[in-house]
Image (cartoon, rainbow, N blue to C red; front, side, top):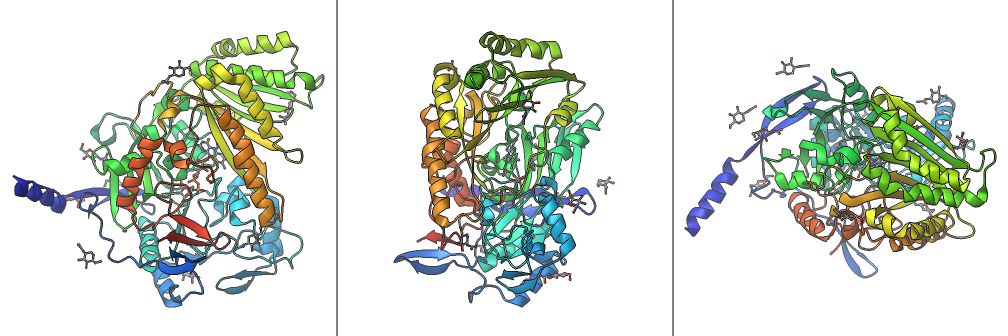
Length: 618
Ligand SMILES: Cc1cc2nc3c(=O)[nH]c(=O)nc-3n(C[C@H](O)[C@H](O)[C@H](O)COP(=O)(O)OP(=O)(O)OC[C@H]3O[C@@H](n4cnc5c(N)ncnc54)[C@H](O)[C@@H]3O)c2cc1C
Ligand SMILES: *[C@@H]1O[C@H](CO)[C@@H](O)[C@H](O)[C@H]1NC(C)=O
Ligand SMILES: *[C@@H]1O[C@H](CO)[C@@H](O)[C@H](O)[C@H]1NC(C)=O
Ligand SMILES: *[C@@H]1O[C@H](CO)[C@@H](O)[C@H](O)[C@H]1NC(C)=O
Ligand SMILES: *[C@@H]1O[C@H](CO)[C@@H](O)[C@H](O)[C@H]1NC(C)=O
Ligand SMILES: *[C@@H]1O[C@H](CO)[C@@H](O)[C@H](O)[C@H]1NC(C)=O
Ligand SMILES: *[C@@H]1O[C@H](CO)[C@@H](O)[C@H](O)[C@H]1NC(C)=O
Ligand SMILES: *[C@@H]1O[C@H](CO)[C@@H](O)[C@H](O)[C@H]1NC(C)=O
Ligand SMILES: *[C@@H]1O[C@H](CO)[C@@H](O)[C@H](O)[C@H]1NC(C)=O
Ligand SMILES: *[C@@H]1O[C@H](CO)[C@@H](O)[C@H](O)[C@H]1NC(C)=O
């Protein structure tokens, strides 16, 4: 009996194949290829280069290889890679370099000054769309080490900072595969960069080879996906929120998918691998809850499909288990929904209002937050910005609600504000569709700022039993120290409102969420390492700690949280899911071809030597 079991296992391993549908941008179609799947057989890593052994402070590490070291691939190897990727390999030059005389990079010094390009960089530095279009720029610049910002003083140095050395501007799946293969075979640190929205620097990294996925704009709609009767859309790796919603609106009838609130955030990249929350989340769960299938490239260079039938562990892990950890996603297929009549509202309580009552501002905020359970229990999503004497709740989103219905949900809050004498401005409007609401009420966000970010989730119980404690914590965040000023971005949603149990890797505690709040602390230009360490300490141990103390949720969001907090695995996923994610990571990426801070299985990895060398403790 024992032998026959072994035979069956071997047979299923030998004959297993996966139908990997590989997005081919040029034909804007999906071509099918059969590729051998290794998931149940154990992947073959025999062509991977070994880590470089280094001793740092008497400790032994295995490190990635960096320019200037003997292990760094030769010029001819890079030229070969460039051929494989059909000329799409470029030397990365930081986006502000045109304002500097030279870029002093690891491959030498390049003259970069260009007055016209410099003017563009200065004028567009805070423009998200421009930043996304750059080969490797980060929207939040802190984790580039704030190198090479645009300037009017061209003599200022421009160095690599924490950027990559080369970028593949991939236009075909085969280019992505070539980049993964090259990184694996040469022990070069690899970064996948989609839109550059990541708050904690996970789409940049010192000395890396970057694969830019922005050109993968393929979108295909299905009435009956794979004969399941489910209406769905297959979305290429580079597609952003506004694009998919705009195309969905053009369908007959108009369709939506669960995207983020931000029009420029990607869908198939870091967003969905973190879970992905947005205006539809209270009604339809996280974006990840809506995934039917992924097409990916594994760390060993194989194409694979992950869904409820194939590579099921990988499928689960890609749905919220952390970005850049298991595979490079080529496409995601998600459920679609019919768009609906929707109503939106805005509420402002701020110091520039005529008759503003500073003494009543806190009371206004307290009332607003007290009703947050009520809002999400009525199916709403609310986005708000908050700092001292400033509350901007824009918008309240009532999908499927008429103006009268939304007004009825919000009225108890307005009555309470009126009774207390709080001065506020409130507007409410009905839209033919959610898409119309989205275009009217969600605002563009700025790029180019240097800040550190954290965040925490408050659940129903926190709000029901400790709203005043939460308000005290908010005050700590807004003024963490006499000389500092903190900002919050709040999101009222509950992915468990209609989807109490799912098969996603997201933390189970989300299914009773009420408010997920991001904390932001700005970092001054030219901050020294000591200043940065001081601010990080304030964010971790004063601001976010105050939020944690006011909450029993135990949960925060991997994409919008402090990666330096203790117990991040438990807090991002819960201990059971975390253990399973680590097992899946060790199967699909045991060598650490991928790396993003505070993701499953990265405990032994650290970035040494001033944030430059990625090394594993041996
Ligand atoms: C202005 C703004 C608004 C936001 N709004 C929301 C929101 O409404 N809801 C929400 O949930 N989040 C939101 N976020 C956070 C967002 O989820 C993260 O920034 C997320 O990392 C963005 O993913 P990306 O692929 O667009 O960005 P990138 O920065 O390009 O990538 C992020 C991470 O994903 C990895 N990655 C990218 N593409 C792939 C791929 N194809 N395969 C494997 N790994 C990949 C990268 O290596 C990196 O680790 C917002 C962020 C910003 C800056
Ligand atoms: C995509 O493939 C299908 C099936 O092979 C074919 O009918 C269709 O014409 C192709 N579309 C494009 C744009 O190539
Ligand atoms: C994939 O393999 C199966 C079985 O080996 C075969 O029947 C099928 O035609 C192949 N499909 C493609 C697209 O090569
Ligand atoms: C792994 O791949 C190498 C080629 O890269 C091959 O020589 C070797 O036989 C493979 N090992 C197994 C167990 O399949
Ligand atoms: C890659 O090839 C293209 C086209 O030949 C060329 O323009 C580009 O400079 C090359 N990249 C590198 C890094 O040499
Ligand atoms: C960038 O700035 C220039 C002015 O220098 C402007 O003409 C252009 O429209 C801007 N581009 C974007 C994408 O905003
Ligand atoms: C990063 O910035 C710090 C200043 O905070 C500087 O001391 C350090 O040299 C920079 N490192 C790199 C690699 O740019
Ligand atoms: C389509 O359905 C088949 C049969 O159920 C399944 O094996 C396959 O993985 C599915 N493909 C996708 C992309 O969902
Ligand atoms: C402050 O409130 C006023 C009046 O209600 C509003 O018009 C304005 O947009 C608010 N300011 C900001 C920056 O939100
Ligand atoms: C959600 O929180 C409420 C209020 O504390 C509680 O009554 C309810 O049982 C919780 N639901 C879940 C699924 O935990």
